[in-house]
Image (tube, rainbow, N blue to C red):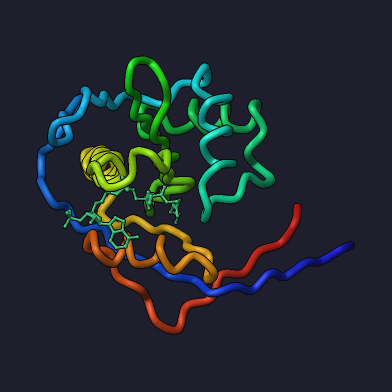
Length: 171
Ligand SMILES: CC(C)(COP(=O)(O)OP(=O)(O)OC[C@H]1O[C@@H](n2cnc3c(N)ncnc32)[C@H](O)[C@@H]1OP(=O)(O)O)[C@@H](O)C(=O)NCCC(=O)NCCS
């Protein structure tokens, strides 16, 4: 059996709710057209993949086929989110949990929309919904070669967990 053990830097973070109870689905960045956030549905897949492919710091990999994402969304109803402007996806994030820990993947905002609060909003909605589901801790993985992503999470209240390693195996 081929055994692959992948060891990369792991940054485990603790969720910090910035605005408890927030359940917003739309907001207005300063002086900008309305950005609406809503549930990620499978029809958003193509636009989300295009977004993930255009940003640095998100790798579309195994588990990201359309059928696999469809199954993921069904398993974690309503938790993944998108942001859209005039019907175009400008932000996306996958969110789920295993009954014990929340997990957030593939947070991305279109480069032209960086700095408008979209990433923060999407994460907040994930965190709020996880909490409402009874989950009290959430984790993310940040690639060690993504210092900007790392600083975003730190800026937004998440904490690194020193001494942790991520390990994996192909099944
Ligand atoms: C990381 C990313 C999602 C941030 O999205 P964004 O919409 O530009 O971020 P926001 O405008 O919501 O920023 C929210 C806060 O984080 C801060 N922030 C944003 N990017 C930051 C960065 N790289 N480093 C430090 N702080 C950052 C903002 O200044 C803002 O702070 P404030 O609330 O005190 O004003 C976006 O830059 C992106 O798509 N990056 C590429 C993909 C990626 O790396 N994803 C993370 C994978 S782990």
